Image 1 (cartoon, one colour):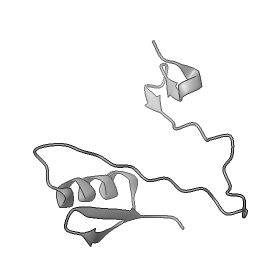
Image 2 (image 1 turned 90 degrees about the horizontal axis):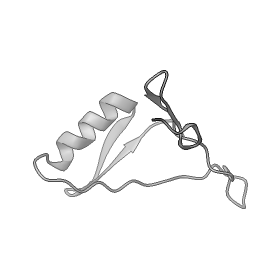
Image 3 (image 1 turned 180 degrees about the horizontal axis):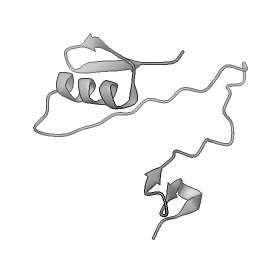
Image 4 (image 1 turned 45 degrees about the vertical axis):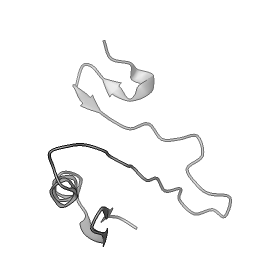
Length: 73
């Protein structure tokens, strides 16, 4: 069963990420997040491409083992 407080809406089957209580930094800038994913079977280039295609954005290869997806600034 879905939990509305966590952002999953059972009726629609959709996931929406709830916003944190504080959306801006102390300086008034939008807060940012980072996500680290560890897995076996797909290389980082392939995963980056899939994420960028699904969510939108451009892949930036920071290092061979670290990529960034850049979207709305």
